[in-house]
Image (cartoon, rainbow, N blue to C red):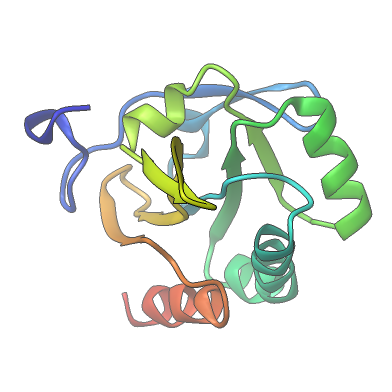
Length: 158
């Protein structure tokens, strides 16, 4: 996504649809009227992604008390998400963005270097959307430890 089309703070989030870990279609517009945290992560069942999901899981009740839903998004399949969600006992849904629609809308796919090799991958990023569907805050290039608490603190101050 080019810079001029990139979602920025204060802009409305586009209407997005995606298949969740349970195989159902989720329409982002249907979540209007509440806060939404969308966090993008590289891959199910990897150490950093498991830690991040666990931190959001452990704070989920506090997010819900603030009328906020959490969605995790990666390019993994719905079946992979289902296994990951069940194993980690995640109370929130995971979006299978296998066609990269969500990743491209939020501009989270960038060149990365792993073991000296360059590849395109998901840059760990989180977005906080207000009840009107406008981007309120974003965190890009996230470091996992304590990140969910940072997002919750920002929500509490909003």
